[in-house]
Image (tube, rainbow, N blue to C red; front, side):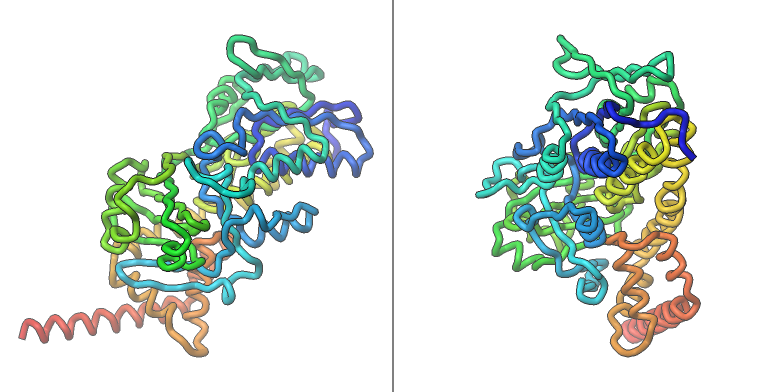
Length: 454
């Protein structure tokens, strides 16, 4: 069912944001235009330079590329070159109350997991080649006909007559330039100034709820990184009232540390984490090469579309705590399919863009919230977390340990929907095994206590 307003030869598309969401949309738009045999003009606006090191080139992301996403990109004809990959991950190591559980990729992953730098490396870093993941994607879009204007957009003006174009105002604040587009794609994240500008337009957009996190890059040297972390992503689940979880991600000479708190991240949160016994001796007393307090989306935006305007990536919706880059691809795909396949009027975008996103992301995040709340309960009770780790480590033919390892893997990699993880966690036999395991641990603790008391 085609919409009232459709894209045709001569249509002009403006994409605000040259990160993954914007570049993915440009790639998909070109494929759609070729399929339909129409000539379009597509311009990407972004004030960042992804060839810069440090904050000026960084998109404030941990930089983990899920194997499933890399496979989807390969099917799209968009293969990530190995020279842009810093590490190939061999497993996840989970740490809770001095318990450690290793989940190897060989048991759990169908496709390889990669770590990358979104910009061209941390501040003061020196790499012999270009390594920026975002630069690769933007260059790919540019090579396929997208024009890139390295200037920020400051204001958006919707037309009074729906048949007219949207006007963007971009460039230096003292001398703004105008660009008129038949479709505007907002591919900026939740850390962008344009969120308030889009709200000001008055069509009902409400940004996602956000949580401030902490992220830092440490140069430990390749030998030390391999010694301490191998090629594993390490997830820490401390017994803490403030820390939900932390990840340490190896990237060559560097590691990326990301802290997600139960509330807004503060310097005190970072101080608490780096003061933990198992963390204190790993990191040098000197400060990190880079650190920031980026916001992440923790809920879906409301009404992320209007007439000739659609928001994708973090500004619309993404998976709870996980796979921001993959969510960028999915939302870009939904937007391109809706705009080229059906139309760009608000009613069509509601039906063809927002509607299909409800089940895989928006509703699925409800299960994600429940799972992370359950995880908070487990990490606050050492007996329960110890029971889970012991069962997951158990060898043999029993299905319970394997299923539990699969649940933990999926929780922290996000490789399957949260709803499926939730269903696995409700397995009766698994819950009975965990209950009996917990009773056994409590019995042993009671025996030890009585011996000491006697």
